[in-house]
Image (tube, rainbow, N blue to C red):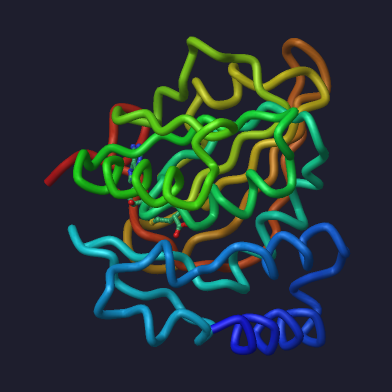
Amino acid sequence: MKKEREELVDKLLSNGYIKTDEVRNAMLKVPREEFMPLENRKYAYIDQPLPIGEGQTISAPHMVAIICEILKLKKGMKVLEIGSGFGYNAAVVAELIGSEGHLYTVERIEKLATSAEENLKRNGYNKCVTVIHQDGTKGFKEEAPYDRIYATASAPQVPEPLKEQLKICGRLLTPVGSHNFFQELVCVHRVSENEYESIKLGGVAFVPMIGVHGWPEK
Ligand code: SAH
């Protein structure tokens, strides 16, 4: 599947989703099929979201590229992800922050948290990634503050705890908007202790972020 991975990365590069060598190399390295259910692995290098069970999806590769480019991840950073799914985006981020960095990834569905943990371990990412099973709208206070926080599920507004758990000069990226339809990717920059600047980066479609500071469970 290496050839298909190279072709997909080339396409993401020529479409402008991948902009840097760092993101290119990380996406070339991580085998996306390893972070998918067996029955869907044959579709791993099609640029689209795919089901991972529990009504959830693995994000499309171009969305992972967009997130990683906007976050400007550097070696050694401490990062928080909300929504582990099967752990693919986490593995790409782990490549970007290196063994000197650490990613904490929070997943609310226990079965998915277990799968993410197994997939990350099998592929050698267990030292620099910790999977936590809980409501990620509360962030993960135990390890705060973070250089970067990103969510791969969409909230009605930016969850306050995530803003509070950012380092000064840190960046937060999250989709915000309606439950199932139009959402916008929002990037929040913590300028000082009490000052935040946010910019809207355009329309996206993510599964809902369900939790105390997100959407209510139905
Ligand atoms: N990062 C994943 C995307 C998975 S889809 C990837 O690499 O493909 C988004 C995930 O967010 C789902 O697994 C869903 O269960 C999870 N999620 C939704 N609300 C959440 C919350 N409050 N806390 C943690 N995870 C949440």
